[in-house]
Length: 221
Image (cartoon, rainbow, N blue to C red; front, side, top):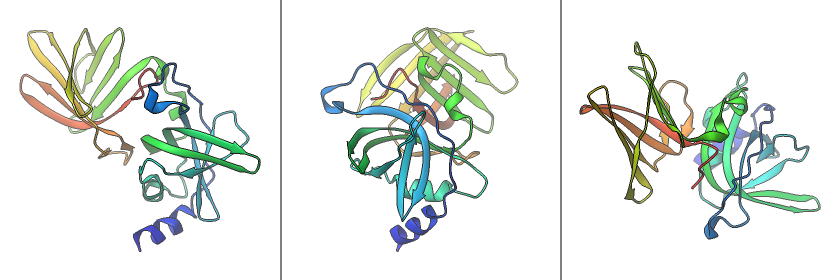
């Protein structure tokens, strides 16, 4: 019943604005032939379609990775918002049979501007939370931490791999011990409803603030 209901909701999706296509520079053996992409989601004849930026073709999504993208899209779809998706998969184009074998869903959100996110290709990770507001952007140059009522803090960091896709970024700044803990787990942004592929915790001197995160354009494992 849930799948049938999701199909009905997806059929009501509006036409969404196309966004950028992003090819990862390095792919592991398990990702051979796969591409990191951003773009639009639409629906037709009960099928979910993905259209990369600057592409006229749309690809029928075949959820080979079990990402539940159909249900996520149905939950977020409404008459006003544009639906943005950040994915990784393998495009199969054979005449009229154009499909995307979807393996990884990084995020789905209502947005008409997400494809224009500044410095996305340079980012390793972005994480954010609410109550209070906080935002962390991680790149090869360092980590920038923004918190409500405080100036941005740019610091170097050390990354520690914890297994099972989990990792920890840590630093010492202004006599504070700062850590960002990240785990591969479906996470829903409490303010925007955006679905992201990682949960995140910002810990400063033992105080924990929870939020969601996703890999930027320079990292897509």
